[in-house]
Image (cartoon, rainbow, N blue to C red; front, side, top):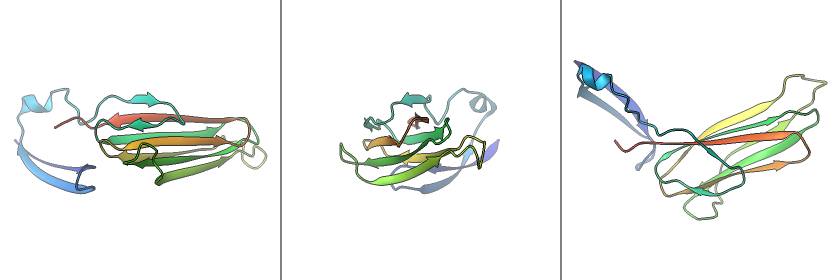
Length: 138
């Protein structure tokens, strides 16, 4: 059986799109192998080094009327990354919109690069979640 498999690789060279035709038999299709590792929770305001190429998922939200804050995501080759890759700002005004606001982003991180998500809460009621998922060796 022939399948065309198209996927994005976030490795050198960055953003390379590969399109490849492979012979895959039925047994190969039924394996539990995955391109990704398991999701891992990370701490906000703590620097990590990526052991393999992967992605960071960040969710920032407000759960109290009047809550406001912002998140900056940095990554780079230095142990103290300075390059801003993403940012989000939240303000919860229950009078104008009773739905609790949230923002999120998914950012690629290269192997051996450092990354940190910094949350600044301007008052009470901010929450954030940071998750890492790596790419398995193929």
